Every structure is written in structure tokens, then in C-alpha cells.
Image (cartoon, rainbow, N blue to C red; front, side, top):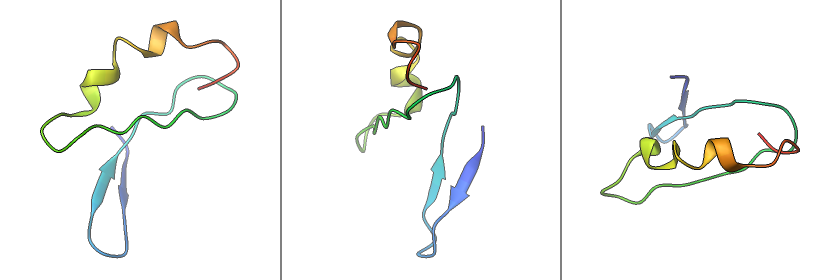
Length: 48
């Protein structure tokens, strides 16, 4: 999974699939990005 390193040292892992406008889904402190795996197949084709 790609990773972004912020200037303050924070690491952000992200997924970028599809084409169109990006959708930003943020997980909470006790969760992770896999919480959104169920969501991706249901997004319209105009977003990624």
C-alpha cells in the first residue's frame, strides 16, 4: 500500500483506485483503512 510521509513525521497509508473525483475516508484512532473495503465497490463510477 502506498505511503505518504508528512513533514511532522506522520505516515499516511492510502489506496487510489479508479478514476474521477477522489473520495477521502478517514478511519478513527482504533480503526484502520480496511474498514472501507466494503465501501469501494459501491461508489459511483464518477469517483475514485
